[in-house]
Image (cartoon, rainbow, N blue to C red):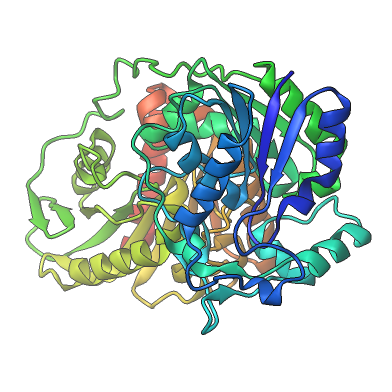
Length: 496
């Protein structure tokens, strides 16, 4: 039978696994719940050696537990923050780790601190180096409390201890890939994660997610919130046993699926126009003697800082910039620094800086500007919808994300276009892909509801048979017509 080592998330200890351990042992498995250094309930504010406890100390805690177990091969389970010490221990004892289970956890790599998954990538600690434990409604910042009874929430409040801040800020150090061994992801759907979201990340997200479609990676869903060991201990124990037996859903998306034959070209034939580079911004120039209105195209993400070609050098944005120039507008493209979900404030600053650079160019009519956002770059539209300057004539949105999905906790609350749109917002040109990822489609639906309620102007362009990122995936007459229609609408708003 399987042997499990269970490591919990922040502010909790081995006690949180009590019901799960009982069920695993009743099935004949061995189970060891780890209480990490400084996380013992009832100690003085959880502050045992608080100034000295860091992520490395917690990795060593898990290594010691592994070394004390006779079974040759173990299943290491990391919940939330717990995946960091689990991966660190698996890296140090690779011969003992038969499987890693990510329980509603992120996907950290070498060099990533746990705090990177939080809003602004930061945590507030007291002078003694501790992050105070949440209570009541404060737990929602760390994950959905859906499914927790009042008794379970009271138990969390009563037994939680402060988290040593260095456990959250010290980078994880790994010598190999976390996916060099069998891996299982257990996704808590009430917290916003699901297999469809993972499939979307593999199909449309940064390349690092493609490993999730590997043959040794499986997935389970639990219909509960972020603390399934308290809200659903029986189903969680069953899933862990099935994971140890190498069950779980394998993704249908092939890890190395070849790109479409047209991936290196834009879906429209665009005449070549002069292109001028200004730092992170390129200007695609029309044939005009006088200053012309401009449209700034804002790519999605997160993207890797090493991605080549960069977004503005990709066929998609070279095409959009050139098409704008062919319509008599200055087409501006940029590379902003949305490298992770916590980078939205920095990316927003890059966009604002790019706007000012574009407006200041003598070839641009600075009083007639449009902003055009794509994919998860759509969240960057929130500031411009909430407080539009007089020169912003319209906002275009193409297969956008228009509210942070539930498990994107690292995104600050400010980046919520569905909450920002109102009667004073500039006209919106919204291109909606009919085959959109369900999680993203829900944010578009929320935006439409808010816009209708407030009386905002929205030009809706539906593309029923198009996928997210259709410029790469779907070169059809339908998608070509949609791009032309959206571009003409933007031109109308900036020139009238």
